[in-house]
Image 1 (cartoon, rainbow, N blue to C red):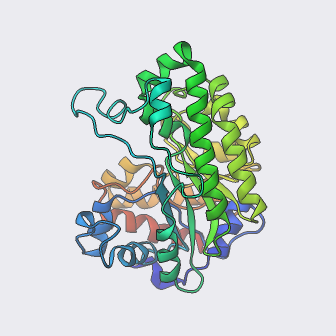
Image 2 (tube, rainbow, N blue to C red):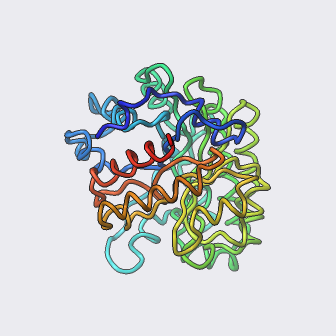
Length: 347
């Protein structure tokens, strides 16, 4: 199976869906990330053991996406902000393993990059030179304001500092926001970038990590500025965020976000989100990863077809998972989803 054999890349079709300006001529695909292991399995390479500086790395990466029928290549590069690797193990290995700012002095002595060089922009240039006609990049910085601050301070440290040292919390959010916006201003002006994006996981199964009030104060002004930068360049802005965001969806839409990615069936199925907010914002993806991995093939095909019928009826949706392409997802199962999506949307 090769979804690409059915069509050539045409990023304008993806943009039609995201901006809700016209029905696309074909069903676009969208994913936020693919694990190196999944890319390696699909491409038959040792991609999972390669680094971005290795020869052929970016060629494999581009061919991976275009070879599955995507119109756009997702690309994000982290800020030039070093994070230490702390001790591993225990329940806090993820949330507390990169802590580097606990005090005002830590903030002052941290090696912040200049706003003139917030990220390494070279990968965008390399990927741009590898794109065939009709393909573009959906690009941004890796990790958003909340993710950066929660790593630098730790989830526990950030929670305590909100009460013990709120001015430090405000300083670090402002600093991270300024660096991301500096990167966005450059990325948004790149001809090869057709849409801006930002990933920032704000929540878990039942709520957001920060209170809605804290998000409105510390995070959402940066999102609004991100969207403004994208729109000033004539490009849409996409937010990827996991978790239960029910309490803040209207705030997010108010920031000017054009499309939202990451949906979990047990929180809010993508078709329910679309029914509630679809006239204001485009949902992307939403197919359950467990279903893709484990359901019998005929059930997976029926499931995919139902999602296409419910979400692509007006043309304003893109097919994809609810989160990302993981190491444990069988490649052939994902290709079934893409093939079924192409078939269902062509009828």
